[in-house]
Length: 443
Image (tube, helix red, strand yellow):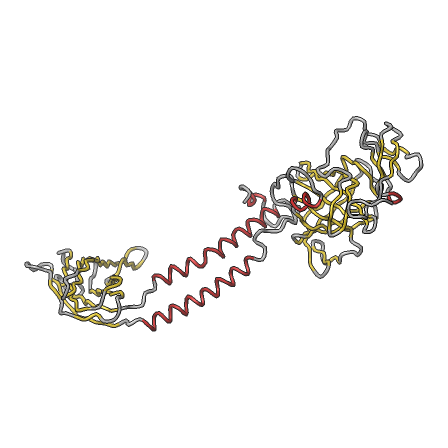
Protein backbone atom coordinates (compact mmCIF):
# COMPACT_ATOMS: atom_id res chain seq x y z
CA UNK A 1 0.00 0.00 0.00
CA UNK A 2 1.34 3.42 -0.92
CA UNK A 3 0.34 6.57 0.87
CA UNK A 4 -1.86 9.35 -0.45
CA UNK A 5 -1.59 12.97 0.66
CA UNK A 6 -2.60 12.08 4.22
CA UNK A 7 -0.95 8.68 4.31
CA UNK A 8 -4.18 6.68 4.40
CA UNK A 9 -5.31 6.36 0.77
CA UNK A 10 -4.17 3.13 -0.92
CA UNK A 11 -2.93 2.80 -4.44
CA UNK A 12 -5.65 2.09 -7.02
CA UNK A 13 -5.97 -1.25 -8.76
CA UNK A 14 -6.26 -0.95 -12.58
CA UNK A 15 -8.53 -3.35 -14.52
CA UNK A 16 -9.60 -3.59 -18.14
CA UNK A 17 -13.25 -3.15 -19.21
CA UNK A 18 -14.32 -6.25 -21.19
CA UNK A 19 -16.78 -4.13 -23.19
CA UNK A 20 -14.62 -1.30 -24.55
CA UNK A 21 -11.09 -2.12 -23.32
CA UNK A 22 -10.93 1.02 -21.22
CA UNK A 23 -8.99 1.12 -17.98
CA UNK A 24 -10.96 0.95 -14.73
CA UNK A 25 -9.28 2.02 -11.50
CA UNK A 26 -10.67 0.25 -8.43
CA UNK A 27 -10.06 2.12 -5.20
CA UNK A 28 -12.30 0.12 -2.86
CA UNK A 29 -10.49 -3.16 -3.51
CA UNK A 30 -12.26 -6.20 -2.01
CA UNK A 31 -15.25 -4.11 -0.88
CA UNK A 32 -16.16 -3.05 -4.41
CA UNK A 33 -19.16 -4.97 -5.77
CA UNK A 34 -20.00 -3.03 -8.92
CA UNK A 35 -17.67 -0.98 -11.11
CA UNK A 36 -18.80 1.33 -13.91
CA UNK A 37 -16.54 1.93 -16.87
CA UNK A 38 -15.85 5.62 -17.29
CA UNK A 39 -15.59 5.25 -21.05
CA UNK A 40 -18.74 3.31 -21.97
CA UNK A 41 -20.76 3.45 -18.71
CA UNK A 42 -21.03 -0.36 -18.64
CA UNK A 43 -21.94 -1.76 -15.22
CA UNK A 44 -19.54 -4.56 -14.30
CA UNK A 45 -19.45 -7.20 -11.60
CA UNK A 46 -16.21 -6.46 -9.71
CA UNK A 47 -16.52 -9.66 -7.66
CA UNK A 48 -15.68 -11.84 -10.69
CA UNK A 49 -12.18 -12.10 -12.18
CA UNK A 50 -13.54 -11.47 -15.66
CA UNK A 51 -15.54 -8.37 -14.65
CA UNK A 52 -18.80 -9.80 -15.98
CA UNK A 53 -20.99 -7.26 -17.78
CA UNK A 54 -24.20 -6.59 -15.82
CA UNK A 55 -25.65 -3.66 -17.77
CA UNK A 56 -24.76 -1.75 -20.93
CA UNK A 57 -25.82 1.77 -21.99
CA UNK A 58 -23.88 2.66 -25.14
CA UNK A 59 -26.06 5.66 -26.04
CA UNK A 60 -26.60 7.22 -22.63
CA UNK A 61 -25.80 10.89 -22.09
CA UNK A 62 -22.77 11.41 -19.90
CA UNK A 63 -22.98 13.48 -16.70
CA UNK A 64 -19.79 15.13 -15.48
CA UNK A 65 -19.42 14.99 -11.68
CA UNK A 66 -18.76 18.32 -9.99
CA UNK A 67 -16.33 16.43 -7.74
CA UNK A 68 -14.12 14.48 -10.15
CA UNK A 69 -13.70 10.81 -9.22
CA UNK A 70 -10.33 10.27 -7.64
CA UNK A 71 -10.45 13.66 -5.89
CA UNK A 72 -9.01 13.45 -2.38
CA UNK A 73 -9.81 15.75 0.47
CA UNK A 74 -9.80 16.09 4.23
CA UNK A 75 -13.34 15.47 5.46
CA UNK A 76 -14.23 15.14 9.14
CA UNK A 77 -10.54 15.18 10.00
CA UNK A 78 -9.65 12.24 7.77
CA UNK A 79 -8.65 11.78 4.11
CA UNK A 80 -11.46 10.61 1.83
CA UNK A 81 -11.46 9.85 -1.87
CA UNK A 82 -14.41 10.22 -4.24
CA UNK A 83 -14.79 6.79 -5.84
CA UNK A 84 -18.42 6.63 -7.00
CA UNK A 85 -21.01 8.91 -8.51
CA UNK A 86 -24.66 8.46 -9.35
CA UNK A 87 -27.58 10.62 -10.42
CA UNK A 88 -30.99 9.71 -9.03
CA UNK A 89 -34.41 11.09 -9.81
CA UNK A 90 -37.93 11.14 -8.46
CA UNK A 91 -41.27 12.23 -9.87
CA UNK A 92 -43.33 14.65 -7.76
CA UNK A 93 -46.37 16.56 -8.91
CA UNK A 94 -45.76 15.41 -12.45
CA UNK A 95 -42.22 16.86 -12.47
CA UNK A 96 -38.84 15.15 -12.50
CA UNK A 97 -36.27 16.11 -9.86
CA UNK A 98 -32.67 14.89 -10.02
CA UNK A 99 -29.86 15.00 -7.51
CA UNK A 100 -26.28 13.77 -7.43
CA UNK A 101 -24.63 11.44 -4.90
CA UNK A 102 -20.88 11.08 -4.39
CA UNK A 103 -19.46 8.01 -2.67
CA UNK A 104 -16.44 8.81 -0.47
CA UNK A 105 -14.07 6.14 0.83
CA UNK A 106 -11.44 5.89 3.54
CA UNK A 107 -9.86 2.42 4.02
CA UNK A 108 -9.99 2.75 7.81
CA UNK A 109 -13.23 4.67 8.29
CA UNK A 110 -15.26 3.19 5.50
CA UNK A 111 -17.83 4.97 3.36
CA UNK A 112 -19.82 8.18 3.57
CA UNK A 113 -21.62 10.24 0.97
CA UNK A 114 -22.10 13.75 -0.30
CA UNK A 115 -25.38 14.61 -2.00
CA UNK A 116 -26.13 17.72 -4.05
CA UNK A 117 -29.37 19.22 -5.34
CA UNK A 118 -29.57 22.76 -6.77
CA UNK A 119 -26.44 23.80 -4.88
CA UNK A 120 -27.61 22.28 -1.58
CA UNK A 121 -25.17 19.76 -0.11
CA UNK A 122 -25.56 17.08 2.55
CA UNK A 123 -22.95 15.03 4.33
CA UNK A 124 -24.48 11.55 4.67
CA UNK A 125 -23.53 8.48 6.65
CA UNK A 126 -25.26 5.14 7.17
CA UNK A 127 -26.87 4.68 10.59
CA UNK A 128 -25.90 1.66 12.66
CA UNK A 129 -29.10 1.82 14.73
CA UNK A 130 -32.72 2.16 13.66
CA UNK A 131 -34.60 5.32 14.63
CA UNK A 132 -37.64 4.94 16.87
CA UNK A 133 -40.97 5.33 15.11
CA UNK A 134 -43.15 7.67 17.17
CA UNK A 135 -46.05 8.01 14.74
CA UNK A 136 -46.83 7.82 11.04
CA UNK A 137 -45.17 11.20 10.57
CA UNK A 138 -42.51 11.37 13.30
CA UNK A 139 -39.38 9.38 14.15
CA UNK A 140 -36.96 9.88 17.02
CA UNK A 141 -33.19 9.59 16.86
CA UNK A 142 -30.72 10.68 19.54
CA UNK A 143 -33.65 11.98 21.61
CA UNK A 144 -34.66 14.36 18.82
CA UNK A 145 -37.89 14.13 16.83
CA UNK A 146 -37.78 14.39 13.04
CA UNK A 147 -40.87 15.13 10.96
CA UNK A 148 -41.66 13.34 7.71
CA UNK A 149 -41.03 15.51 4.67
CA UNK A 150 -41.33 13.37 1.60
CA UNK A 151 -42.20 9.92 0.25
CA UNK A 152 -40.89 9.02 -3.17
CA UNK A 153 -39.64 6.28 -5.44
CA UNK A 154 -36.11 7.09 -6.58
CA UNK A 155 -34.40 5.62 -9.61
CA UNK A 156 -30.76 5.76 -10.61
CA UNK A 157 -30.37 7.33 -14.05
CA UNK A 158 -26.57 7.59 -14.27
CA UNK A 159 -23.65 5.86 -12.51
CA UNK A 160 -19.90 6.19 -12.62
CA UNK A 161 -17.04 4.75 -10.59
CA UNK A 162 -17.45 1.88 -8.12
CA UNK A 163 -19.87 0.90 -5.36
CA UNK A 164 -19.87 -1.58 -2.47
CA UNK A 165 -23.42 -2.68 -3.39
CA UNK A 166 -25.29 -3.89 -6.47
CA UNK A 167 -26.18 -0.82 -8.55
CA UNK A 168 -28.39 -0.87 -11.64
CA UNK A 169 -29.66 2.03 -13.68
CA UNK A 170 -33.45 2.13 -13.46
CA UNK A 171 -33.82 0.02 -10.30
CA UNK A 172 -36.40 1.63 -7.96
CA UNK A 173 -35.96 2.26 -4.26
CA UNK A 174 -38.61 3.68 -1.93
CA UNK A 175 -37.27 6.71 -0.08
CA UNK A 176 -38.83 8.40 2.95
CA UNK A 177 -37.21 11.56 4.34
CA UNK A 178 -37.59 13.03 7.82
CA UNK A 179 -36.19 16.44 8.69
CA UNK A 180 -35.10 18.42 11.70
CA UNK A 181 -32.84 21.08 10.15
CA UNK A 182 -29.95 20.85 9.64
CA UNK A 183 -30.43 17.05 9.84
CA UNK A 184 -32.28 14.75 7.47
CA UNK A 185 -32.84 11.08 8.23
CA UNK A 186 -33.78 8.91 5.29
CA UNK A 187 -34.93 5.34 4.86
CA UNK A 188 -34.34 3.48 1.59
CA UNK A 189 -36.34 0.32 1.11
CA UNK A 190 -35.71 -2.32 -1.51
CA UNK A 191 -38.02 -5.25 -1.06
CA UNK A 192 -37.89 -6.15 2.64
CA UNK A 193 -34.51 -4.51 3.25
CA UNK A 194 -34.42 -1.01 4.79
CA UNK A 195 -31.29 1.11 5.09
CA UNK A 196 -31.28 4.22 7.29
CA UNK A 197 -28.95 7.16 6.75
CA UNK A 198 -28.36 10.52 8.39
CA UNK A 199 -27.55 13.62 6.37
CA UNK A 200 -26.39 16.96 7.69
CA UNK A 201 -26.61 20.12 5.63
CA UNK A 202 -23.23 21.56 4.63
CA UNK A 203 -22.24 24.46 2.43
CA UNK A 204 -20.85 24.05 -1.05
CA UNK A 205 -17.95 26.28 -0.01
CA UNK A 206 -16.95 23.73 2.67
CA UNK A 207 -16.99 20.92 0.10
CA UNK A 208 -14.93 22.95 -2.38
CA UNK A 209 -12.38 23.83 0.26
CA UNK A 210 -12.09 20.24 1.52
CA UNK A 211 -11.42 18.80 -1.95
CA UNK A 212 -9.43 21.77 -3.29
CA UNK A 213 -11.82 22.19 -6.21
CA UNK A 214 -11.43 24.96 -8.75
CA UNK A 215 -13.99 27.57 -9.78
CA UNK A 216 -16.97 28.05 -7.47
CA UNK A 217 -19.61 25.68 -6.05
CA UNK A 218 -22.97 25.66 -7.87
CA UNK A 219 -25.35 28.47 -6.99
CA UNK A 220 -27.90 27.67 -4.30
CA UNK A 221 -31.48 27.75 -5.58
CA UNK A 222 -34.61 27.73 -3.46
CA UNK A 223 -34.88 26.27 0.04
CA UNK A 224 -33.93 22.66 0.73
CA UNK A 225 -35.71 20.27 3.06
CA UNK A 226 -33.12 20.41 5.86
CA UNK A 227 -31.53 23.76 5.04
CA UNK A 228 -30.97 25.64 8.31
CA UNK A 229 -33.09 28.74 8.63
CA UNK A 230 -31.02 31.94 8.85
CA UNK A 231 -33.45 32.94 11.61
CA UNK A 232 -33.07 29.71 13.61
CA UNK A 233 -33.12 30.44 17.34
CA UNK A 234 -33.48 34.18 16.79
CA UNK A 235 -37.21 34.38 17.53
CA UNK A 236 -36.88 33.42 21.18
CA UNK A 237 -33.81 35.57 21.72
CA UNK A 238 -35.21 38.67 20.06
CA UNK A 239 -38.58 38.43 21.84
CA UNK A 240 -36.77 37.96 25.16
CA UNK A 241 -34.64 41.02 24.43
CA UNK A 242 -37.77 42.94 23.48
CA UNK A 243 -39.41 41.99 26.78
CA UNK A 244 -36.41 43.19 28.80
CA UNK A 245 -36.29 46.45 26.86
CA UNK A 246 -40.01 46.96 27.48
CA UNK A 247 -39.44 46.49 31.20
CA UNK A 248 -36.57 48.97 31.07
CA UNK A 249 -38.74 51.40 29.10
CA UNK A 250 -41.56 51.15 31.65
CA UNK A 251 -39.14 51.70 34.54
CA UNK A 252 -37.70 54.72 32.75
CA UNK A 253 -41.20 56.06 32.17
CA UNK A 254 -42.04 55.68 35.87
CA UNK A 255 -38.79 57.34 36.90
CA UNK A 256 -39.36 60.22 34.49
CA UNK A 257 -42.89 60.69 35.85
CA UNK A 258 -41.55 60.75 39.41
CA UNK A 259 -38.78 63.20 38.53
CA UNK A 260 -40.95 65.60 36.52
CA UNK A 261 -42.30 68.63 38.39
CA UNK A 262 -45.80 68.36 36.90
CA UNK A 263 -46.56 71.62 38.68
CA UNK A 264 -49.75 73.60 37.98
CA UNK A 265 -48.55 77.22 37.75
CA UNK A 266 -51.76 78.80 36.46
CA UNK A 267 -55.46 77.86 36.62
CA UNK A 268 -58.25 80.28 35.73
CA UNK A 269 -61.83 80.10 34.37
CA UNK A 270 -63.20 82.42 31.68
CA UNK A 271 -66.24 82.99 29.53
CA UNK A 272 -66.48 84.07 25.91
CA UNK A 273 -69.59 85.47 24.25
CA UNK A 274 -69.31 85.60 20.48
CA UNK A 275 -72.29 87.94 20.29
CA UNK A 276 -70.52 90.72 22.15
CA UNK A 277 -68.56 93.28 20.21
CA UNK A 278 -65.12 94.48 21.13
CA UNK A 279 -61.66 93.02 21.52
CA UNK A 280 -61.79 89.31 22.44
CA UNK A 281 -58.11 88.91 23.28
CA UNK A 282 -56.72 89.39 26.79
CA UNK A 283 -53.67 88.58 28.88
CA UNK A 284 -53.53 86.47 32.01
CA UNK A 285 -51.88 87.31 35.30
CA UNK A 286 -48.15 86.60 35.51
CA UNK A 287 -47.03 83.16 36.67
CA UNK A 288 -43.57 81.80 37.33
CA UNK A 289 -41.89 78.84 35.58
CA UNK A 290 -39.16 77.35 37.76
CA UNK A 291 -36.33 74.86 37.27
CA UNK A 292 -34.36 73.87 34.22
CA UNK A 293 -35.72 74.42 30.69
CA UNK A 294 -38.58 71.99 30.24
CA UNK A 295 -41.99 71.62 28.65
CA UNK A 296 -45.04 73.73 29.38
CA UNK A 297 -48.48 72.24 28.87
CA UNK A 298 -51.55 74.43 28.28
CA UNK A 299 -54.93 72.75 28.83
CA UNK A 300 -58.28 74.15 27.69
CA UNK A 301 -61.50 72.66 29.08
CA UNK A 302 -64.73 74.05 27.59
CA UNK A 303 -68.46 73.44 27.87
CA UNK A 304 -68.85 73.35 24.08
CA UNK A 305 -71.83 71.46 22.68
CA UNK A 306 -72.37 70.98 18.94
CA UNK A 307 -69.98 73.78 18.13
CA UNK A 308 -66.32 74.61 17.83
CA UNK A 309 -63.94 77.19 19.26
CA UNK A 310 -60.45 78.32 18.37
CA UNK A 311 -57.78 79.60 20.73
CA UNK A 312 -54.71 81.56 19.71
CA UNK A 313 -52.10 81.66 22.46
CA UNK A 314 -48.81 83.41 23.04
CA UNK A 315 -46.64 82.45 26.02
CA UNK A 316 -44.60 85.61 26.71
CA UNK A 317 -41.60 86.09 28.97
CA UNK A 318 -42.24 89.26 30.98
CA UNK A 319 -38.57 90.17 31.24
CA UNK A 320 -37.21 89.37 27.76
CA UNK A 321 -40.37 89.64 25.67
CA UNK A 322 -39.69 86.26 24.09
CA UNK A 323 -42.97 84.85 22.82
CA UNK A 324 -44.05 81.31 21.95
CA UNK A 325 -47.06 81.43 19.62
CA UNK A 326 -49.38 78.48 19.20
CA UNK A 327 -53.02 77.70 18.64
CA UNK A 328 -55.60 75.01 19.21
CA UNK A 329 -59.10 74.28 17.98
CA UNK A 330 -61.71 72.52 20.12
CA UNK A 331 -64.90 70.98 18.75
CA UNK A 332 -67.55 68.68 20.10
CA UNK A 333 -70.69 67.36 18.41
CA UNK A 334 -73.15 64.67 19.40
CA UNK A 335 -76.65 63.43 18.70
CA UNK A 336 -78.73 60.40 17.85
CA UNK A 337 -79.68 58.66 14.63
CA UNK A 338 -81.03 55.32 13.49
CA UNK A 339 -77.91 53.60 14.82
CA UNK A 340 -78.23 55.21 18.27
CA UNK A 341 -76.23 57.87 20.03
CA UNK A 342 -73.08 59.27 18.50
CA UNK A 343 -70.42 61.82 19.39
CA UNK A 344 -67.47 63.39 17.63
CA UNK A 345 -64.50 65.37 18.90
CA UNK A 346 -63.89 66.57 22.44
CA UNK A 347 -64.72 69.63 24.49
CA UNK A 348 -61.20 69.81 25.87
CA UNK A 349 -57.72 69.92 24.40
CA UNK A 350 -54.10 70.44 25.37
CA UNK A 351 -50.85 71.35 23.70
CA UNK A 352 -47.23 71.39 24.81
CA UNK A 353 -44.47 73.93 24.27
CA UNK A 354 -41.11 72.13 24.61
CA UNK A 355 -38.05 73.38 26.48
CA UNK A 356 -39.19 76.72 27.91
CA UNK A 357 -36.57 78.42 30.14
CA UNK A 358 -37.39 79.45 33.69
CA UNK A 359 -38.80 82.93 34.26
CA UNK A 360 -41.92 85.02 34.74
CA UNK A 361 -44.50 84.53 32.00
CA UNK A 362 -48.06 85.39 31.03
CA UNK A 363 -50.44 84.17 28.33
CA UNK A 364 -52.08 86.29 25.66
CA UNK A 365 -55.33 84.54 24.76
CA UNK A 366 -57.54 85.21 21.75
CA UNK A 367 -60.66 83.01 21.61
CA UNK A 368 -63.06 82.71 18.70
CA UNK A 369 -66.11 80.60 17.92
CA UNK A 370 -69.18 80.26 15.75
CA UNK A 371 -71.76 82.88 16.61
CA UNK A 372 -74.68 80.45 16.14
CA UNK A 373 -76.93 79.76 19.10
CA UNK A 374 -76.52 76.58 21.07
CA UNK A 375 -72.80 77.11 21.41
CA UNK A 376 -72.73 76.18 25.06
CA UNK A 377 -74.62 73.92 27.43
CA UNK A 378 -75.81 76.59 29.83
CA UNK A 379 -76.07 79.65 27.59
CA UNK A 380 -77.14 80.16 24.01
CA UNK A 381 -74.32 82.63 23.45
CA UNK A 382 -71.47 82.27 25.97
CA UNK A 383 -68.82 79.57 26.17
CA UNK A 384 -67.28 78.85 29.54
CA UNK A 385 -63.79 77.49 29.61
CA UNK A 386 -60.86 76.89 31.93
CA UNK A 387 -57.17 77.45 31.13
CA UNK A 388 -54.60 75.50 33.10
CA UNK A 389 -50.81 75.78 32.68
CA UNK A 390 -48.48 73.02 33.91
CA UNK A 391 -44.72 73.12 34.23
CA UNK A 392 -42.65 70.06 33.29
CA UNK A 393 -45.55 67.59 32.81
CA UNK A 394 -44.66 63.92 32.23
CA UNK A 395 -44.75 63.17 28.50
CA UNK A 396 -45.72 59.77 27.15
CA UNK A 397 -45.18 60.57 23.47
CA UNK A 398 -41.55 59.43 23.40
CA UNK A 399 -42.36 56.30 25.35
CA UNK A 400 -45.30 55.39 23.12
CA UNK A 401 -43.12 55.78 20.02
CA UNK A 402 -40.34 53.73 21.62
CA UNK A 403 -42.91 51.11 22.70
CA UNK A 404 -44.08 50.49 19.13
CA UNK A 405 -40.57 50.68 17.66
CA UNK A 406 -39.38 47.94 20.03
CA UNK A 407 -41.86 45.53 18.47
CA UNK A 408 -40.65 46.04 14.91
CA UNK A 409 -37.51 43.79 15.02
CA UNK A 410 -39.17 40.75 16.70
CA UNK A 411 -42.24 40.99 14.49
CA UNK A 412 -40.01 41.26 11.40
CA UNK A 413 -37.91 38.23 12.40
CA UNK A 414 -41.04 36.23 13.25
CA UNK A 415 -42.62 36.98 9.88
CA UNK A 416 -39.40 36.13 8.01
CA UNK A 417 -39.05 32.88 9.98
CA UNK A 418 -42.57 31.71 9.22
CA UNK A 419 -42.19 32.74 5.60
CA UNK A 420 -38.96 30.72 5.32
CA UNK A 421 -40.56 27.65 6.91
CA UNK A 422 -43.73 27.93 4.82
CA UNK A 423 -41.61 27.99 1.67
CA UNK A 424 -39.63 24.97 2.90
CA UNK A 425 -42.74 22.92 3.66
CA UNK A 426 -44.47 24.00 0.46
CA UNK A 427 -42.07 21.55 -1.25
CA UNK A 428 -43.08 18.72 1.06
CA UNK A 429 -45.55 15.92 0.40
CA UNK A 430 -46.89 16.73 3.87
CA UNK A 431 -47.05 20.53 3.58
CA UNK A 432 -48.97 22.09 6.50
CA UNK A 433 -49.62 25.19 4.36
CA UNK A 434 -50.71 25.67 0.78
CA UNK A 435 -48.05 26.09 -1.84
CA UNK A 436 -49.47 29.52 -2.71
CA UNK A 437 -47.96 30.85 0.51
CA UNK A 438 -44.52 30.06 -0.81
CA UNK A 439 -44.72 32.33 -3.83
CA UNK A 440 -42.30 35.20 -4.17
CA UNK A 441 -38.63 35.73 -4.64
CA UNK A 442 -35.98 34.11 -2.51
CA UNK A 443 -34.82 36.17 0.42
